[in-house]
Image (cartoon, rainbow, N blue to C red; front, side, top):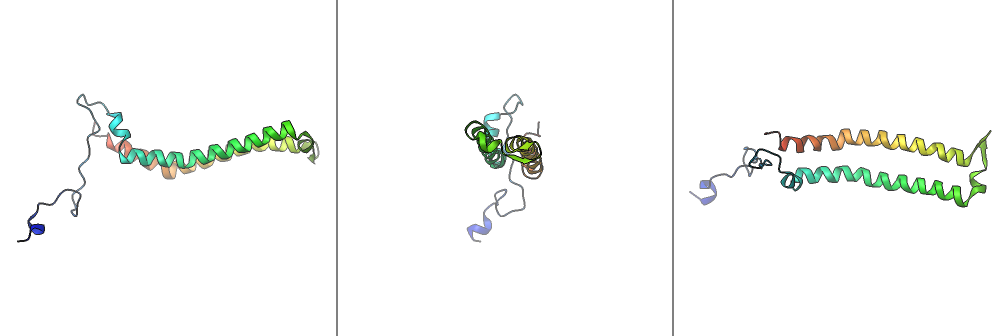
Length: 129
């Protein structure tokens, strides 16, 4: 018989056996957070969370800084009426609240679809407790 046919199959490699779970608990049964943080599932969770949070934060800060700088250095532009007693500055100020709500709703949707499944995967690593 050839070596490839007589070799004992390793779990998770060309077999239907699941990959053995790595133990993320220390000798006392407590979670080993350093090992858990180094796990591929946790790293994927961090990437997923940062993938939305970083661009959204940068975008919002640029939008807010633009509002503040226009208020300070372009009062003529900010005081132009849009309709009735509403001027550009007031409109931009109200849009700050709108953008905050929109970002919050978008993050909730993103977290439910992309982040929460990763949280469940990381949680499953230590559910053997």
